[in-house]
Length: 267
Image (cartoon, rainbow, N blue to C red; front, side, top):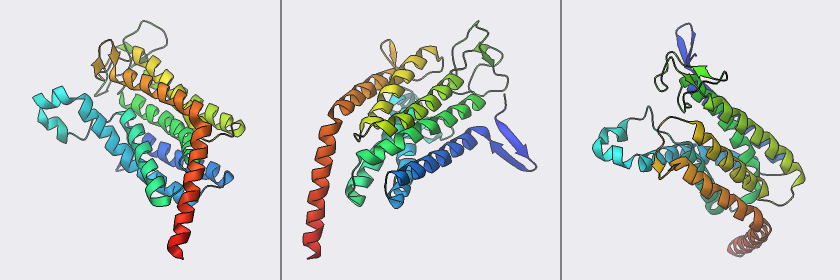
């Protein structure tokens, strides 16, 4: 398993490289799909920057929350930025910052952009999981199956032991979800439902893959922290899917009122 690529004096870390490829791919997909749907390119770039900042902060914040007992025992964990980033925190942080940006600064509807962004997010996650595979983090449980991976130089996974390749399973699932959502969005005309499908599909997939993982991720009873969040995400997705028509109407009316207020201010 390789984690680094050496090109002369330059060393490329595969985890970071895959994250970068994921971000660039997501931006390209969102720009292309956004243009087809008549969405603002400037707004998309703004969402992209907000998602990066909010995602990084969210990843770290959720890690702190999950690791509170360990941090109390060893506060130095707070300053160890090499590890400690939780994917769900990044998703939540990115969504929240993008929502604030759209509503407070751009005065635009959230749901149409949400629908364009989330399929690309899933594809970006697919690349990210390949990075996890190269690094050996987010590893699976020990297995006797022929379908396994053995790490030899990982700083995260146990080396020399056949493990379930949960990273590759997750990556394939993320890519598949992204493709399904892009195809689904071509037929679904109600804003909000494509992103609702992301919450439902990713939540179900993540809940299942957690049973195959062996790395520590925090727990609450018999479920991991990520499984608890997955259940909440699926519920939110179902509610959003059901209420999407009403939310679209509310956003439309809200936008009309904001336009009227702007016209009055200009007069």
